[in-house]
Image (cartoon, rainbow over all chains, first blue to last red):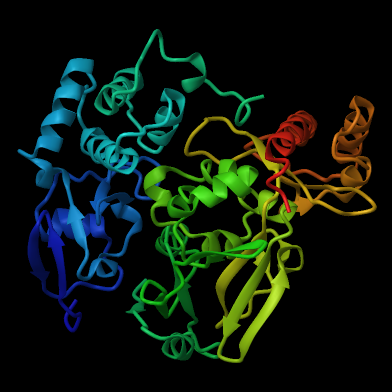
Length: 177
Length: 288
């Protein structure tokens, strides 16, 4: 890897310079293996599972599909960077109350996806089926979706009046009939 | 798998780096959500990737009776543009079905169009909306209708060294997109059907396009011709469904068999027409 240039970016609020970052290094690998931030998980490595979700400039991004050097001078936030913030406490509380953690492998990705959706929607969140669909890129192999969607609904103040609509989890042809 | 990575700050520099004679070829890198897994899997062997992230291509503009969408505008930003939901409701609902939110924060419209995937959820609505592309290379610019740009599955008339500067879509146009897949989110559609209405055409005001076909997404002109008016009769709708089903060669693969796809094409077309008729009513008065 000699001869590769260094990379300067902001990670969890701190400026970091990493020497010799190869062109084909993924953001996921930079975070885990060069910066030791192992809260970001590797799942499918093809953009299909959401386990590697981080925030780039505040928006959820799949770190397995992002080249590290695209992050020059950008702001990257991992699950470690949320620790102790009011936002993290709100998410933790919502997860705990809904019982939304099982084995935990998918949890960092879900947490960052939730934080991103909460920031995007602010005070005017969409309805529950839309929100559930917007979490669809994160897979949980313990099958805990109901509780996770519930946590998101609680976090955004979206009422869960009765059972979640069945269509949230079963296949219907796209959109309303 | 080693490749160089460049971040040009001007089009001149980008076109120099994307030299069409270069071997192995240099490829433009937009969102990377499709390109990077393909390179890692060894399907492509670029000598260099030329990032478009420093070029002024992530733009959105309404200009008269068109919206101009920059080639590298992330899909999520496009989806959240109020003008898209208001003026192009069918395109807006297709945008929400691509990949997932984190993927759409980086995936771009230009990238989706040049990949020309037979299962693209965006090409059917863009075809039904009669979109066109502004392409730019070191030799200058050219404009091409999307319908002429697409040549086959994964095949377009894009030249090496050419970039998608803008996607032009006429507005406002009532429309809708209906699809079917195995899983509702983060999956690829088996069939997707888009319909849209134009204001004046002696033959038919309907524009219909579908994905999940044997080749790339295409217009279904036979079905369009069966619908001579904006508010079609039940008989006319059934004739359009019949012509779409009979006149279309559909894909037959592990995602769905051809007969099932034929069934879906009819069901989804019927639903899309009905939805577009309703939207046309509610958009009346706001249309040019």
